[in-house]
Image 1 (tube, rainbow, N blue to C red):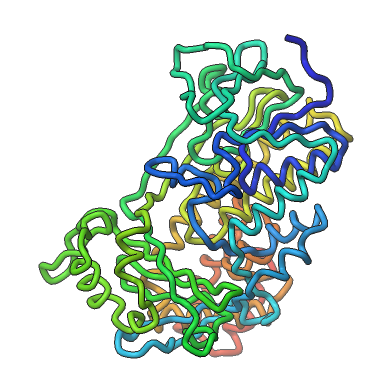
Image 2: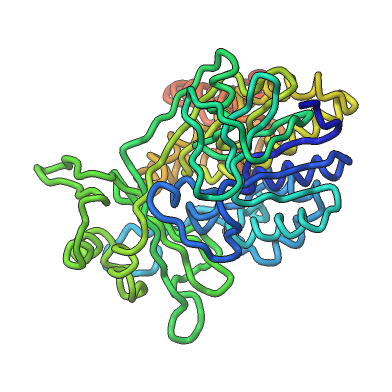
Length: 481
C-alpha cells in the first residue's frame, strides 16, 4: 500500500486527539481521527476496564489553566470555552469536621489576584472540539475503529466495530480498514495502542506505574434555593485528611463534583488504626461509617452519597513513561500516551494541550517540514513530560496534608511577598506551573534554585539585621535567577 500524501492519522478522539487534529487540519492536512469506542454522544454504556480506559468517561471535571488556554486560543475557542467554565481563584480549606464552611482560603496567586484556573466539564469540552472538527471538510472522524497494529511498512490496521479485539503481540491479521498516512499521532491515552505498536517496531523503553491510591467521584448538588451549597464557589474546595483527601470543583449548574482520593486497599494508620481502602467499602453501612468518620461536615450537602459511592466506579491512578516518543517522522506520541500522570497538579489536560500546541509550533519553526519538526518535538518535549509527572505526584502530599498546616501557609505568604518584590526574578512553583509556559523541567530547576536561596537566607537571617538580610536576599535572587 502506498503512502497517502498529506494525510495524518490521529488515534484517539479525546481532548488531546481532537486538539492536535484541529491544529493540523487548520494547516491544510487531511486528517483522519480514529476512536475505538462508539460515539459517546449516543450515550452508550461502558463497563469494567473500558470505563477508566475511556478518553471521555474517566472523570467529570478538569482544571483549565494558562497552558491549556493558550492552545484553545490558537484554535479560536478560548472565549467559547470560558463561557461554560467556572473560575477558581484559590483553595478553600475544610479542616474542621464540625462545620461545612471552609476555615481558610489560599489564593492561587497572592501577587496577581486576576490569575485563576477554571473548572470545566470534560465531556462538554470534548464535544465542542468534536463538533468543530466535524465541521472541517478535510477531517474524517471514525468511531468504533480500534487500532490493531502498525506494520513494518507503516500501514495502520484498524478493526471496524466493537466486537473485534485488538491483536496480540504476535498476531498481525489485516485490519478491515487500512491506511498508510504521512504521520501517525498517538493521542489515545495511558493505554495507548499506538504506543504498543511502537514497542513492536523499535527499541522503546516503557513503564506503567499504578500508585496505591485511587479515586471515587460523588456529587454535591445545588441547595434548596438553587444556589451553590458551599460558600465561596469560585474555589477548589479541599478536605485534607493527612494520608488522603476529598476535593470539590464547581459546575455551572450550581453543583460541585466531589472526588475522594484515598488508598484503594486498607492501610495501617496512626495509633494502631487503619485507613479503610475504597475497594473495601462494600455496603451502605460501610459508606456511612467512612464518610461520617472523615467528612461528616459535608454529608448534609450530599443527600445521595451512599447510592453514588456504591454505584460509581472506583478508578485507579496510573503514571506512564516512554522513551523515545517517536519513530523518526512517521509516528509520535503526545498527552497521556507519552506521559500519563496523576491528577494532583491539574495539568493532565493542560500539558496535553500544550503538547499539541508545541508540536504545532515546531512545525512552524521548521517551515512545515515534518521530517525535522516531529523528531525535534519528541526529543525536546520529553523532559517536560517527565517533569510534570514528577511534580504532579509531589503535589498530592501538599494537597492532602500541607494545605492544613500553618507553617505551609507562612511559606506561601513569603513566596508571594518575594514574587511581589522581585516579579521578574522570583516566581512561586505553583505560579510557574499553572500561569506560565515555562517548560516543566526548567520549572523544577528554577524551583530548586529558589529553595536554595530561601535556605541560605534563613541561616543568614539567624545572625544578621533585617537590612542586611534584605540586601543579601536581593543580591542572591538577582544573581541566581
